Image (cartoon, rainbow, N blue to C red; front, side, top):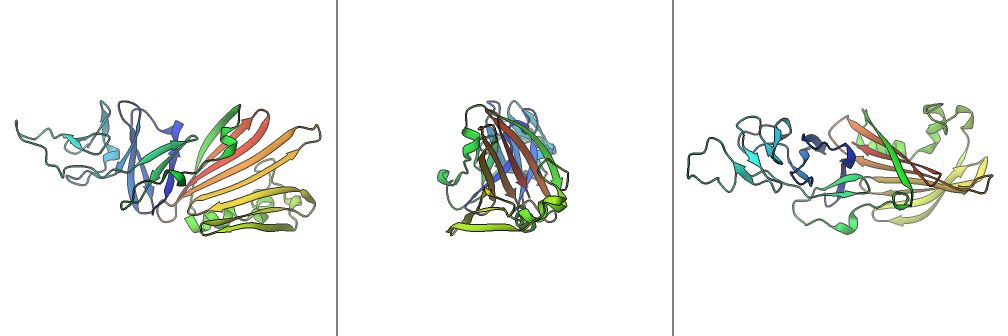
Length: 265
């Protein structure tokens, strides 16, 4: 659990409501405080365990819908309407908080409770940093287990058949032998080049980094001499049994077509 996990696309987080999200079996709530800063707590009120995500935001504070307790961005309880005048709010009347970071349009959460966030582990993707970057994003819910989903994303052989005509890259008649050359192995994953037998000059760089990052990048020069890039980033978040969410982001960079996919599980 000493890892960053993708929660949501930054631009999809509303300013006036809280989002219920799940990592493994932990239910979280994500919202923006009065200053627009992203905040994340365990999705239950310490009072009677009601879901905080079903409450409302009041002046940037998260209010429980059950008894109106309010919590600041640090999870500290700052208001109990039923408390007598002069009485102090108990110190243990606080919501468990989680560290979050926004990076390249994605909100990440640090799930470890025993160690501080490791900034060096926060994923970074080079295509996002290219001049002229723009993107269009969509969200899809899918009934996939985290392990099955990762295995599926690592398997380009199924694309021409399973995804036939669903996009411009998938055609049944393109099903053919593939090659794969592993170039790197680490304790966290692997990387290597793969391609199709009919077009061996088009080599895709596939990289997996546990627990949730899979990237596939294809760069080449087209017939007009223009540099082209197709880069897909799959960020997989375990979110309970038998469910997944796909955040599909497509970008262009100075005429270069890139596609990024953020997958929540």
